[in-house]
Image 1 (cartoon, rainbow, N blue to C red):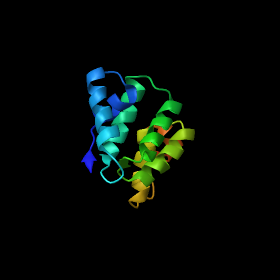
Image 2 (cartoon, rainbow, N blue to C red):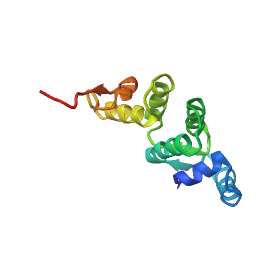
Image 3 (cartoon, rainbow, N blue to C red):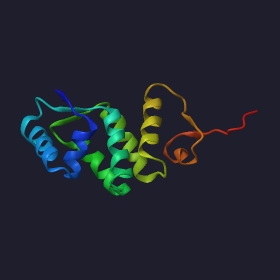
Length: 135
């Protein structure tokens, strides 16, 4: 297994730097396979979504498609893929960010009764809103 950084994944998806794209394609399509997969960490998944959303302005449907593609590509393995699938399902219909959905899913999988937040949108992906003013 070979770890892949965010920039390799982004180059492969966005096809925006000919030299780096050629290398990313050669690695992902030529060197990796089911027996020798590329490994994508949760951090890389979150960074990839953030870069595609903030830098490339990829709409939500496109982000969902990208994450789904990373999860289902035979030559890639995603860390805790079942949690990423769960977060993706929640993100698809919720108003919060993908990272918030993943934070809530990881917390629940690790025994958290709930995940607390000050972010009103994160409530839509499984967190509980707390007040800045607590009695």
